[in-house]
View 1 (cartoon, helix red, strand yellow):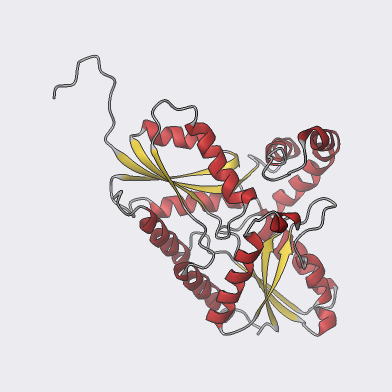
View 2: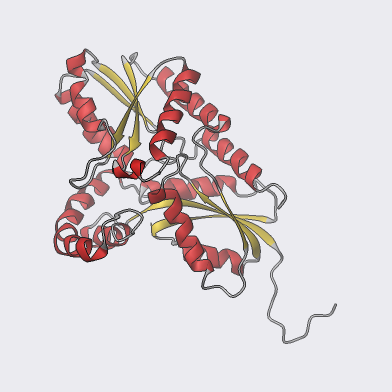
Length: 332
């Protein structure tokens, strides 16, 4: 069939894989953080308070007080490559380029901030991707992470006349490939320490307690990940939840109070792992590796180690490649 001379260019058909992570401000300054927090904390999946009650608090108090403090925290972990979360997610995407053949395009986006999900989805479609796997990089499912990433993608699809076919990556909290990658990473990092921890603490991002009662499986997914990882390592893991925000009751026990209390229990040497994060970020590098260390040592601890996330290290990239290839079955 001969294409008419005035027909617009048609790119070769491709398959797309869009890695999605939470998000980050564009710079470690109060203005950028304020813009980022305004988007993040206005998401109804994140804050389930009616906007008529929440927005005056957010706009009148939080966004006028918190950005400066958060900007200082970001400045402690910012690098020449920018935000750790963005730099690592980009590195994961780069490492997966070509992993599924020439006809598969791998890209990355952030739910909040840049690059945005709509812009990268549209770029994929414009490049010829007629089938796209949306891959939120959250091992444990949560409405405030996995679901809102998918929501944002679906919202952009609703604006498109010619939609690509879509699949989404399911949670992989108990996938043997994920547990094996975690086990390898933790064992390697523990072996490199100059001390033997009295306790290995698994810290997960916190969520309001009511999310469990409302049917969110996140708490159960976290507990199962920790149990399976502990079994694979042959040592028990204690579970805690970090990053509380606001006056509501959150999943517990809290990581900060747990660290402060451990020396009183006789635990003077501790190592922490964050299995709920696919990439190191503010919550691991500043909240845990810096402030968590200070709290533990200040309470009488003697040795503290934070073990890195899987990031773009070989075990993590191999795990992602395996999971994504499975979800691409029939498309390649």
